[in-house]
Image (cartoon, rainbow, N blue to C red):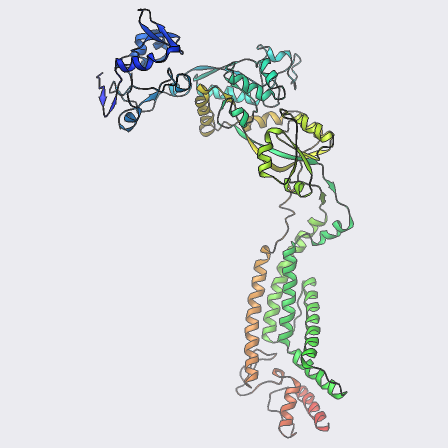
Length: 638
């Protein structure tokens, strides 16, 4: 073992430096057995000379040889207090520690020490788990002076689970039981002797300080040093964090909204509106728009508007009346679109499309797209309708947002005030008296008519039964969440938190699984107070406009193609060219066209243009020619 007092600026203090620092602690001054001035160490309650910790030496083995048998070989290693903490931190091969014998909190002096300044053993490898965690310490544990099944409780002489503590609470011969007690036992088993547990009770004086909260009273016992840890479902709050350190969170407890039980809405409108329930409003709007667009395009593709307009104008001239063309056109167009909308609506409702073999190609493409849309939409509607018609419609407020909208007054515990007001500033909160932290206080306010709902967590059997009596249910609306952890003495917080983490990550041990096992075998509440809400949401899910994207896409694609073809056909007609997308195709007839591509009036005009010879240049049927010739003869006679 070699000495290296000055390495990279990290070096030991000398005798003069030690005497100066330790000699300044006048309140802890003492006289050693040799009659020299000394310093009394709180941990060992032993008077050491003021040169303690100066230069490299096995100071602990020299002054406390009896303790070295407990702490192992490190007790015999030389060490010293260092001059400069930062110099040791900068050095790559030095490691320093803050002293626990002299602390800034108690002595206003911050001093550091190191092994590596004094020997070459190093301090870098995996250290002994026993040393790094709890080192075999015995933790004195209590529970709050309140039994809370399944977390912590005791039994009476008959073996019955007690809900309220009595004299048995202060009797250490009667063991504590519960999910948290078993969880701590399993942690102790996994730790393999790294810590032991000794059970005790809480002080009665702490309940005098915190009469409304046995949980805060148990934290007070930890702060006063009467116990090392309090075990129970203890929320972490700002007030309690000022009193004690906590382990890592064991789980998170939601604060839930509890409201009057929902009733069935049997009014006529509610029952009849179920027919519309399978689709959201956006989906219904989309369906109506598709039907309307199909009607408009179908009217355009048919060419009926031009024929009706010319016939109407001719009729008005016959009877000697005049009518403006725009006004007459609007009236005719509106009537035609209305007729087509009713026809397409009938097709949609009956899930069928008319087969018009003589329709133009754009019209056929349009109706094919509309048929695809109808197939998907009607099938989806019919598949969901039965579920919605037979579903009970509940009439109640199930979320904090809905309660706020209805301006309900909601009771909550006072320690939640800051967070609730910050998150839900528009809610009408009613907070119980300062210091109260029991759900009984919330129920009393509810019974007095001061509020219509409450917010609380930990719905145990007693609370659920009381909710049953008041016909209240626990909603799924999480108002806020609180972490649950154990208040523990500072010296033990890191060690126990380490074992909690190791138990979950490496062994799969969780408090929730143990708690569930206790709840499954426990007495059940008088009624089911858990509101199912949208428990069957997947079965009753409404179809949204997004769900109808594909059939709308198919319809839109065919409608666009049909529009393009119709425009092309109109352009060719304007240039007296043949169209292959009319009611009959002109494929194979070069230089010819069919009479069906043009209206009867247009063909008659061509006949009159040929000096009434009545000769057709079009390819047409005998019946079509007879019809046109009759119209041409009528015009010649007039």
